[in-house]
Length: 449
Figure 1 (cartoon, rainbow, N blue to C red):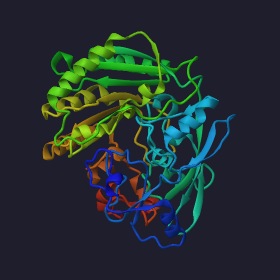
Figure 2 (tube, rainbow, N blue to C red; figure 1 turned 45 degrees about the vertical axis):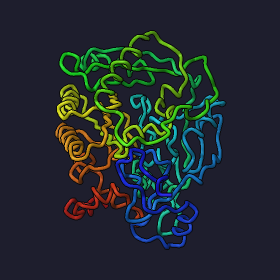
Figure 3 (cartoon, one colour; figure 1 turned 180 degrees about the vertical axis):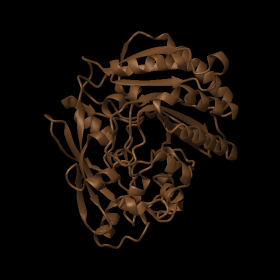
Figure 4 (cartoon, helix red, strand yellow; figure 1 turned 120 degrees about the vertical axis):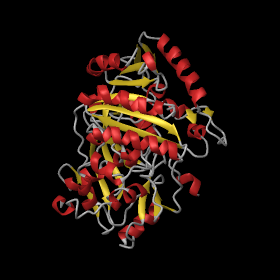
């Protein structure tokens, strides 16, 4: 049982106890949930411990998996919180709709996407997932169910979107989907020699395309430092309106006893990837799976990191600082001798999320994946934190398994407002480690009320 409730990165221990959604609903409605005893758990694709609760139990939400209603004229879909994004795509595709925002995997629940206010390759056009939430129902430990929208319980709406499951148990939600001419994507690949060339391309790429994201050859140094590939995409005018089968035929059938993604492998992989992708620079039409969810095509790919798992570090820094800070972050990883399997750089736009604790903000975001090598990796992550917050940036909490309270406070000035609205029966290992160690009165939480 415990193995099913790991975070996907495996850098954190499994939740010690899990209960089903029905049991949790009965406890909450009966006013029997104890303080800090519960935390909703979706499909376990988190890289950190925001979905773990060592002091209590996680609530398996995957049995709440009905799509309740869909308006084929407006694109508004209502579903249980445990419905997977892949099921929403499959349901809406024949009608010409697609989620306005998708993360890097379709195997996340609706509730998880809202709770983490996930973003995608089109933040510059659509903002975060939370920007497209019409309403949701939230069950709290006072036994009451609250409808939350822009007009009903708006403070709970803001705290729950991006609130990492701390405000109560989300039962269902309504979201607005985006009308698209097809699910297929017309993709274009543009190689760039260094980060300066990327920054020259980025703003124009965002203006001209629905989707834009860059891959960086993180291990390349010297005159090759910062080289990579810019991928842009738009929905094809003529293409498929049918969702393809979720997942892929490839899998990692067992976990090797060591990290397979070592530096020699990554050096060879990066060279081969850059050569192969960089050859095809003409626009080409491709299925949505390969463009949005490439890692979904290899089941259990995270096993390649070995039994100690991985740490992911995602930062965002203001646009004016990015030209110096992004190279500094990449250089810090190279100096530490740590290789990132997947290094992603993209530009966030100015569309504001309704969430109190939304990670995206105007600027550039860099994502790095590191095998867990213990103290050496933790020291590097601490250095990346320092560089980020010194530049006025933020570290992504829902991809974190080790940041301290100071980094949370520096990244999210409004964290006390979430603490005020947190349901006392809900807690996560992330929140206990960060906000739980801060003197709330000293930080002015009373003013936040």
